[in-house]
Length: 461
Image (cartoon, rainbow, N blue to C red; front, top):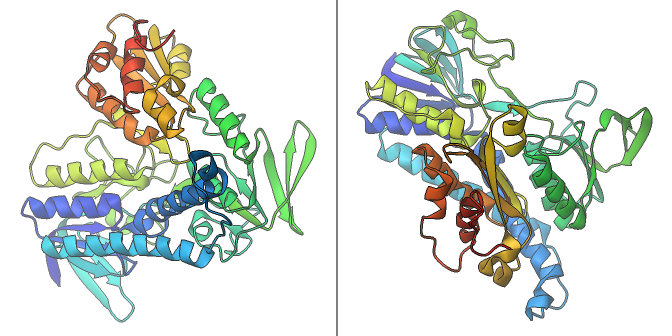
């Protein structure tokens, strides 16, 4: 029986980061996953392939609808879906191949199979050809999450599909209905809309991307509608039959014809068949693994990170969890600031946020000052035809400390990072506004929004 200092169950962003960091710190590490490739949902069927599709579809949309305005004559623009999807697969292969090389370089043992606890320190790993037993001083549960099914609309992989299926449709659906107005639904809806599908987003809540401020959502919705997405909010889905999705709103029945229905109503912690009870690992009321402030479970030597524990189900949050746990196991001072996990919707334009929003601050009766700056007044945005949206900085009215930010605009996911950096050291809006930004860049809008908190934006009326 092989023995390790640490075994990590699940090779997604949280799991592989945990394994690699522990190996850097001198621990003997094994990384277990049921897939033959590393990277988990994110690299194999989630974050990475969806971003590849988004990128390629943006090129297609530019060629069809915007190139001529830039003086670029292309003639007939046609979609080669097979090549389109092949490129996505190549992007995935390059990423997962890179992880395999890193695991080998760090001397992390990669074990392929389904892991089940037989005790708090022992795992049974069932592979295709054999079942082995391994033991470790520490075990980290990093098994991620799975798409939530609607009980009355089970996934069939053909018509009723999850995001796993929606990254590989064999043909562009004529009518695609997306149930759920969150990041996954909007991103994949955008992809297929650009490729020619008639896309309808059906959201139960009064607005899409519900965690964002009302003004951000209002402008974002308008932009998406202009791009061709039909957005129906406040609609409760009731079923699907004979090619029609039905829903209800204010007592009225709604019908949406669909060739395919993408159900993107959230994800659930994936702890199926792990044998947690044999290890003494308890779950909370939401079926998440119960952990303390250092991500220790109720079982000695067993830890849990990422989507299986409380907190946002985001790859970068899982990575930080993983690195911190590896450091704690190795006797180091791991660090995580769960209050500063940025969130991003990778549409075009993107939406990004961190910390406290304006609406939430006002609801909590916080005294705040808000600075906004429109990309329409940013030189680089005008030159690049990316003037939609704005940056919004929320700061404490007394101390000027940045409490949060929301950005609607091209590259918002990149721009939010510097706000996170300033917030990490407790920086003020003035600190942000006095930081030199290169010209001309989109990032100058972040600087100006920082200045606008005290009504000192240079390029605003």
